Length: 384
Image (cartoon, rainbow, N blue to C red; front, side):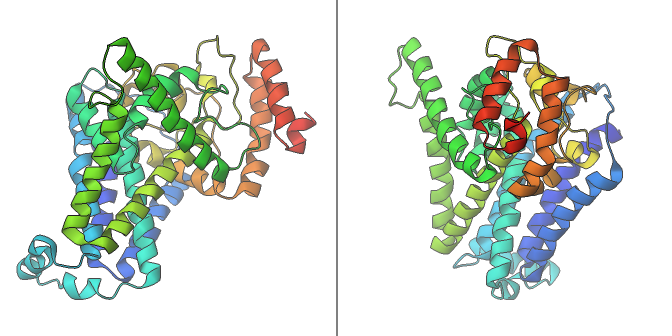
């Protein structure tokens, strides 16, 4: 039974975040700190999860994924209610009537720092519950319900087009210069956020244009999944404004952009510095991997990224830890923190990339390594 329950960790963390946001004030900051500590310290203390259990009822796991949508809606509702011009749907009054907890007076006391903490906490949950779950569901292209739910989850970070570029572009071109999500050696994470976002949207548009022309559909039409994705996000923005006003709208936009930023940071650390001969098959060695326990449980085995790229059609519960694949610095949140400090990132990752060159690279990839090292502007690479 625990093998099913463990993947409910993200539900628990999401509900905790929503309740802390609703309580308002310093509880929001406490919620943000607690969330970070659970992931960073949990990964450090609880070690690795290399188990590969068999699931007799995989539909339970799918329901857990589907529940991400109402959960994310509740978290975002908590945020926009906290900064709304009215008591939306009489929510605060109803809670006070049923429980005696005065949420309305608490929300009027939010400071600037607590507002910023709310943006980061909400954005983190948009990234974790929205993007990570949306990533898993949009890979299930034969399941229309999962695909629809996944795209709506991605719409909260204004990135439903990710379901097009990632599935049909990134997985084809990963670790090559044609992949927007693969960061070359020496690139800063901050540059990568903008470059990958821009190139990813352009890539999604080109993929969709090719599909539409092949099927004799007009490009500028509702058949275009990229356009529909943008409209999905627009619907969320309109609903936010109508329910909560302009201040809450700005907060939602900021949180959504932070969620999108987290996706690009994750892309950065999952593929940084790795090269691949475009004509060769994608192998587990072409992605950075981790088996940290808390990250694996809360992120539906996204941590087992090496197997995911070697065989993208495999659902998360069947992914294997891939013992001989290249390893990240730590779990996901810990590695995100390191990636956001470029000097520390390059200090820790440059030796890892050089080790990858010796241990994992094929003969065909050696010329690509030399070219990447020359362009890197990192002395350790250039002198390798």
